[in-house]
Length: 425
Image (cartoon, rainbow, N blue to C red):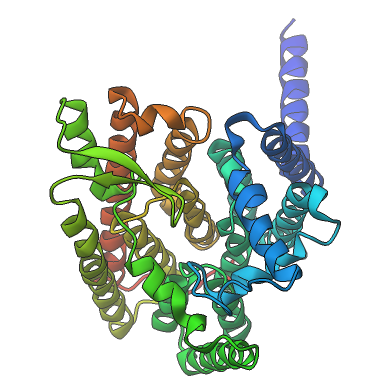
């Protein structure tokens, strides 16, 4: 009887071990990648909540007007995005206007696949890279269709690859992050983190500057003039968007029954914004507050590096900190901004392992709350439903906790030398 029990236990252990090996292998990860992206593509194309609306109703129009020779956004007129954003928007017309949405989703999936391959690496698949890969797939699924259905989704693979290459290939990392920043500005924060953390920062700056000059040069040759930098003024002129962390007090004010504050639709930039006493002042204050937040994180990072903290201890929390500052001190706060969290958290899991379980959990929770609010029940937020205002409030609090965690981690990196050896570098 005892032998049978022992034999059964050993058989169970063998089956468990075999299952663990199968789930931990590359094949399982790539199958999961395909399943997750197939689900996200299907949800986007199903039209529930119109999650792909910006792509099919806005990006496609911009691409078609340029194709017809009417207006080239960012060249003939100022644009809300950096000039390279036009490249993926135009590329999605490759199979015609009728297939624009499907082509866009296929393009983003291919970019994600490239970043996923870089994340998995070659040779033996380490436990940390495996965990980071599983987390990223879970994050995408938790975030929902918005994970693929915006221009931000194009920049995330560039950001992930850039951060993963920062230690060993800083020039290539600089190129990836610079290209990403000229598609959507936010990867510039990761570029700054790399400049602070790596020893070969001069090379990073030179590559970034050279690419920037080249991009601007081509834009000027195309006839852009000052429109090449028009996205700066376009962003500065935006009001306080309803999803912004700074909009929360006004939303609760509306919940309380005021008639002085309302939610309005801005037809110029196609967003819902807060209208009411103090809203314009709050929108104007976001830029200086963002600058202050970036400065605080930057000072902590420089302090850590000057005290001898290695890249593996500084770069991941510094990237988390910069990214979170951009999300918290932001007058826009669009749902797709949650995609930004993937790159720094993936890097943290690869370089720091279990030390990054807290930011990984916080980012996953932000993804879930974002998905609940958008796209399916977004209308409830637009009428300031108390339950959905509460969800947005909790999301903002989680981002603040994540920011506090990042600043503390960067500061601690400069207070005591972290181990310099890194099996994942």
